[in-house]
Image 1 (cartoon, helix red, strand yellow):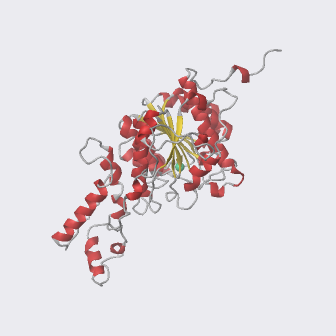
Image 2 (spheres, protein in one colour):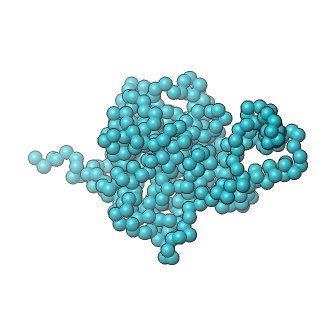
Image 3 (cartoon, protein in one colour):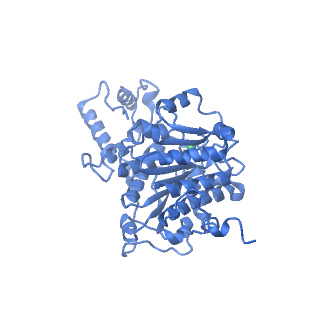
Length: 433
Ligand SMILES: [Mn+2]
């Protein structure tokens, strides 16, 4: 990624030094690993921050002029930047466990307090390790990337919806087969999607480094960038494939200079080299976006995609087999990024950018369970659930079921039953007559 610098025209060496110190503080001051530690992710992840605060060449000259009571040199020079002297500039990034009571590490049962699927909670990496956790849920309550309020409430709505687990199709209850926890919500900057990426990425990395599967509940789709980059930090650049279920391709270019929003994570991941284009598989695209340029970008970069037009022409069953086969023809590790708006708004009114003509619940449950049972799943995110526009809770209910199906697939794989067509003998056609 290219970053603009703070270097300016007529500035003193003292202010140049101050700018350099500020920049260094933003880039390196807050991440766990220092530059050059061999953790290539950290500088890259925190560098995300710079895109927001930085402006064009010459801006400081204008700012200096403004501070002396003169007109700024340009409108851009009047951009209000972060206050480097705010003692709270960075403290939000870390989860505060200083008031936790002393205890042995391990998952903590919270009784009837809301958690994902009623699971025990974990507060630290030590808890994950001591509990030999295989699946760790986390919330990523970002909604600035969609542009209006609501998706940030997704994790809370999801926690409220997830008491029942499993289904009679497989008779496998993943809660009994997998050790899972609620790892809490990622710290975010409520005023900045850009600045929220590094702490989400770090939390995904924390989970993945223990070998557990992060299940990230959004939040808008901007978090796909942090999720997949965090996985690539652990499993290696270009070693993870992504199935992107979505009405939209989410690979938009720069928007008013912003490089990350819910419309851009795919392009960032490909352009920044975290994921090879050919290892991105898009399912369910429809509606007005993108136009030809977007499809040409996907072709130039080797992305594989399946539009609703293809599904309508060839049939869901045929296209679903293509998707499952393509997932098997990719890197060893798989992440699924599931935008709830891939489903038809009839089932998912509670989302920010609904597009008519989408998938049905029964179509997606089967394919998600199949994907999670046939692949080495290392991450899953469910995004764009907005409970503020979800009367009847149908969107939350379907969102819960999608994650439930995936984890049933993970459990099937662990039990050696992992294939797309597995059904319990009890729930197939009754042939006793
Ligand atoms: Mn999306």
